[in-house]
Image 1: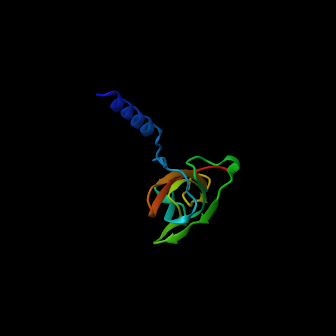
Image 2 (image 1 turned 180 degrees about the vertical axis):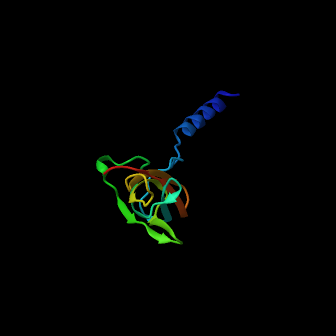
Image 3 (image 1 turned 90 degrees about the vertical axis):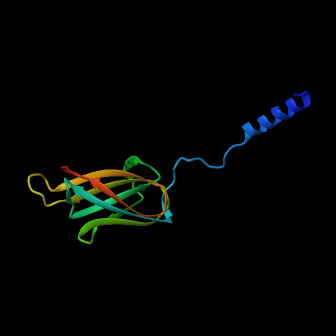
Length: 136
């Protein structure tokens, strides 16, 4: 290998190391403005929670500081299943909190639970939130 070839190889290697990709494989974001629909179904030990409000936080898999959520939806019956629907969302990270009421006996009727979801493609997806009883 000649000195000139060695220098060209070193220069090419230097520029190759300086190149950066414009994006990463890390999913972030979330929020309004896309084609994602998320249907959230709260459950209480295998039974549906008949009265429930679901809160959503965009761009995170963690509960929000100060309990400040971006949106909420009251569950309505879809095919006999109480479902909270969030439409026109982007791909990304989402955190959900469900607070509701169940009619199962033996415990106080108030229930709550949380779930996280990473959405990587458009379209519809379903999230089931397991809930447990609590005293407000």
